[in-house]
Image (tube, helix red, strand yellow):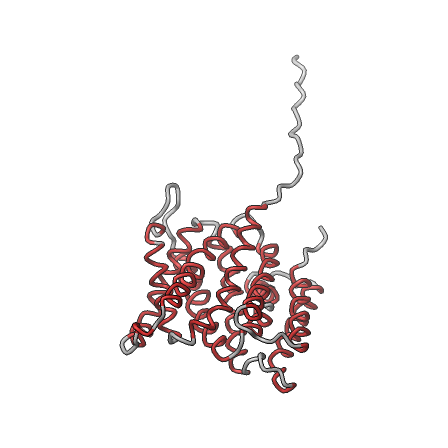
Length: 308
């Protein structure tokens, strides 16, 4: 009888921290916040639907080589096609319309505070569609985010000039819901497709959806009146919004849980507010600072990891 040989034990390695994925998520949200703030310049020159059409068109040309299926990638199922449409309709089309109209009627600072509610809304959508339980600290984070939104929405009554209109803030809140839906749906898509292909296909759907409205506004628009500087800003906005940020986010989201990725959305309102103060000359009032701090407290509470 041969004695059983001892089975060598697999060495236990410390858990890997995906720093590259974290960097991609952070860079993505910082870029989103920056173009949310700088879009204030663009919506003053371009009609909203025309701006969205030009954005999707420029990005589609840049991402033409990303559309094809990669080696070893399975064909798209009907479920994947529906998710891609919803990802584009909510995260690209409706988000762009709500965000651009909202910023046009509001301010970059107000947009920054309202966008701070994204992690809380992600938690609500996770409860509704993924049946995830909302912990007490997440519920407190939602309450803080709602309080910050209410404070910035009605700050105009206290003499604040950069709080924006109520209609503009409601549109920005619609953009928050669209962005949160984008996060939830995107996590499902990254399991079946590459980040590049998701970015390209989502952008093509956005181009298709906005083309009738964009072409209608382009018919009577004087393109010769646009300065070279604004064309350069439009190029940055188009590539950042439809190409770079989506690719960065999907790349990072592939290896990071959605609950952990949600904490990086804090960089969206931070960068949007920074653009508003540093480049657009918006006033950072006491009421605005209080609302901003309350909203960021909600972000921290809603995204703080639970103890194992």
